[in-house]
Image 1 (cartoon, rainbow, N blue to C red):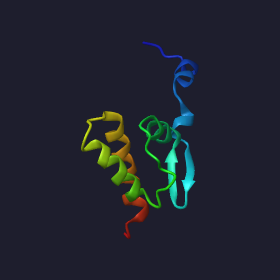
Image 2: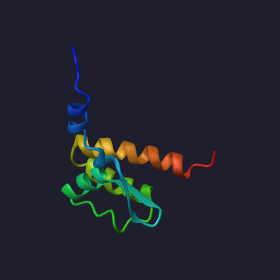
Image 3: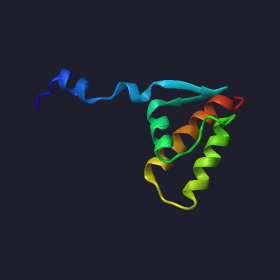
Image 4: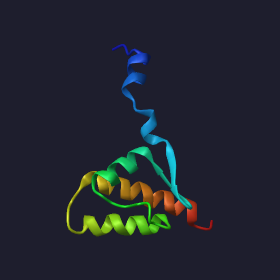
Length: 86
C-alpha cells in the first residue's frame, strides 16, 4: 500500500497541539481549550493545573465524558512532570 505524504500531512491538525498560555504558569493546548470551552469549564480563573484538574474531575463524577477524561489525564501528566521535584 502506498501513502502520499502530502495527503497525510493535510489530514493532521498540527495547530491543535500548540500550547497557549492562558494564565500564570498555565499552558493548555488549543485542543484542550476547545474541549474545556465546549463543556463550559472556566480555565481562566485557575491558578494551577491541579485546580483545573479538580474542576474537570468534578464534572466527571457526575457525567462520563470520554474526551474530558482524556484531557484530564494529559493535564495530570503534564502537571506531574512540570511540578514534581525530581
